[in-house]
Length: 193
Image (tube, rainbow, N blue to C red):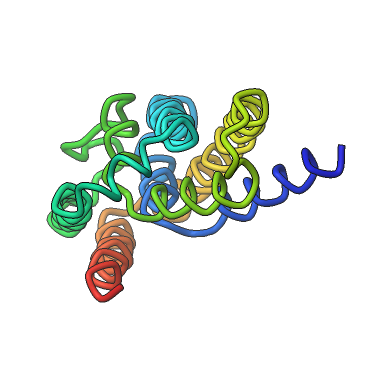
């Protein structure tokens, strides 16, 4: 039981902390409301847990042997985050009118290109399932799935609560540009690591 609680604590700390996926979930909540944002939340959660499970089953070892592939994933992730930042920065500020509606596919893809997701997968599996015990890997994945879903959903819900405050296009444009700066900053920070 102690190990499962430690896994849950790790999953919560990694999932609820600010990062690109949570920033986008927050922005989706502001722009589109909570329920439509659940498409992004679901995609991001399933995308992450698939990555997490595959990491536990040996994906990390495979990428260790292919450093060029690992670097390509990092650069693709940074490019994707910069693309999202550009989309936010160029948005007109009309609620619900953004070009990019929340989508399951986009949420899932974001996780596979998100260096924070890779780090959480490697660190989590390395700390709790480094011996490759299948039962432990599956248990950790199940715990992470629930906590990840609830954490990302909290960000979308918080964004939806701010819709009234950001209903005016000039405020929304300012807010979107702030989110764009946060995404671009996190992308550039990842290049320095």
